[in-house]
Image (cartoon, rainbow, N blue to C red):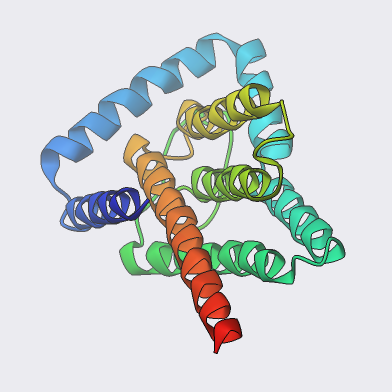
Length: 214
């Protein structure tokens, strides 16, 4: 877990620097992918509409935050208040980090003469990708924390999580409101937040047990 947190954090930092200094190979790649997908979106309006429904409703950040909030309430109700606070706190801190990086980089979104969707505020990182990564990562962690042995839906939920996290990233680039690197940064920062939350939770639990023994 420590390695995962470190690697995702370092990669997120490297990508942030490359975007901030406008590294031309990355910008060229972003532009070529975005233009190809935009042409496809214009040519297939039905599929484009499906992507809009998914990104605006199913995988919208507010939908994800609502899921995280429900998870935190259920944990509180089960009297696992430490985990409830960790879920709520991580979700809030991730949202704050996302906005801080957006402000810091100030990257413009793709601009089209014939857009198929619209979005506001800075592009980097993708809030949709980051929020979905944080929410599903925390949900899987909570289930592992309490129902590791009893629950048998691991394969299904993991599949839903992977499809959702990858899918929402796809929709943002396909609809022309994000560059590919925006989405990758959202995934990296989101995963870094999840792994950091798990590590600090374990550290907090160890300290709590040590305090009880004294």
